[in-house]
Length: 151
Image (tube, rainbow, N blue to C red; front, side, top):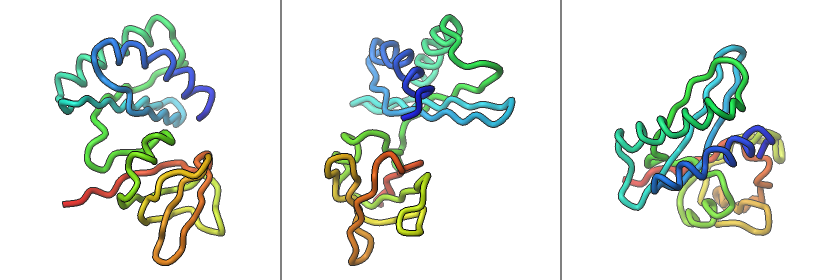
């Protein structure tokens, strides 16, 4: 996790939890003058639009006071949804047995995109079965990981 994301998580998480939600994860995309901070929240009862608005209001107040993001940015708050992104080792372990798709920051054995069955974690590596092959992918290499919904 980058230093910027770690700082943002430390600032945001207490407020999200105080409102009764879990901070599932966050993404920060800085693209010139158009940055986006995307916050995913979860709850045992699910997440509604009103929940997202409540968290957005809370987080906006904290970010206005602390001012950790220079320049203009867009704040988005949403549920992780059915194709939920995975951020932490605990989340990768919890979704063992599910189909996932991963995109790596750094190529691993010449590939950056993988799609297979998640087999949990081994130390700091994500275990992924693709066909007949099992990969140990360093979690730090993962740029994005999403559960593939089952219908």
